[in-house]
Length: 308
Image (cartoon, rainbow, N blue to C red; front, top):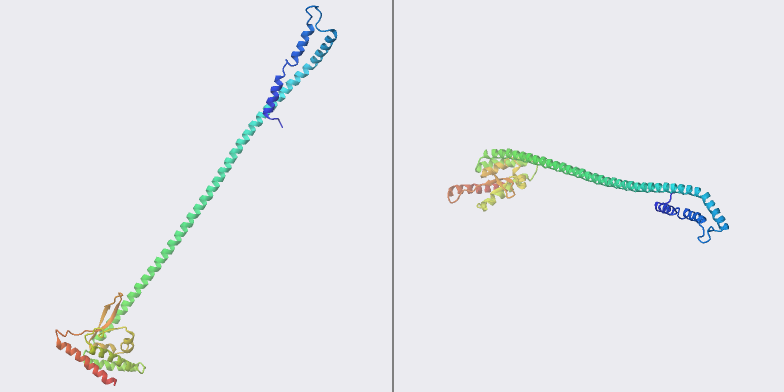
């Protein structure tokens, strides 16, 4: 391990400061003094013993001067190598620090890219999930729309079928009622058919129930002929159908009294079929009204006779 650059610089400066003045300079002074003489006596400056001693020191110095100079040169070379090595190590340290900084920046950049990629992946997944959710919702909406359309088609088909059946039924009822004889004779003939049909049904009280129901209808109209409620019967009223409408001759009885089939619009928007008995205008044609009312009373009397 080489010493630090600052220490090497200090050693080199100390070595360079130890020049020839510190050792070689003193040796030169001693040589010069050996040659000096006293200005008064003319004798050498040093005595014989001193000259011998200084001469010995100079010999020793001269014997050490060469190795010392060589050692100094070698030490300077070593110090120079140390200095170069220290400079190289310092440069390498700077490069290592720079490379470490670059590696750290690269690692940070890689981390940023990784985080960015994760965020993009999350965004892509979220977008894919959203697309899937929207597609599922669109599929559900399309399926629901198809179901609603199928139901609407089915409803329209059922409505059309119901209308067709109602039209056929209406045509059949109108045919039966239009071919029925209006008046007392037609009423008696229809009563005969109704009684026969009710007895053929196998239900013992069917005939009695039918005649009593007819009696109630005619009696209510006779008591209050001006009240249209008593002159309006829903065709598909369960009681009317059970007692009168389901039997042969039932509709003919109503036609013989003057009832006709009509379609009425209800408040809910539905259309119902009713049997309606129109009352002649008493003020404009009293005779026609009297004839109409007399028929009702005659039919009531006949019903009273056959039910008692």
